[in-house]
Length: 115
Image (cartoon, one colour):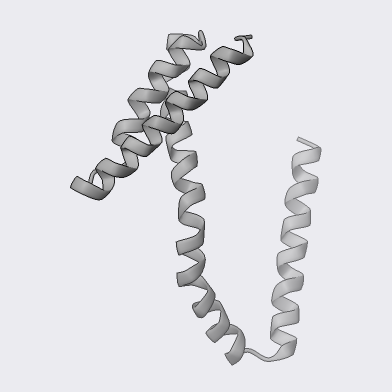
């Protein structure tokens, strides 16, 4: 495991890369992943991550960041649709729909336990 000072340096480098990625994304319209994936690849190399999985880990980390960032805009588009749909449904229909959702979710958890 790297020393705390090395981890601090990596954190500073990642923060700087994030700032540069944001600046370039704002100035010329490129995505942050175009900058962050190579940076992640290099940092994971310094952390002695095997080269076989380094690119996969870099792309996956970039996609995870994108997924988290897109949650808020997604809810801004989906919430009004859900509100309109709920307004048009009766109380009983909403209860049945929610009950089905709970049963399906519970069944998926039980299936995963016994796999």
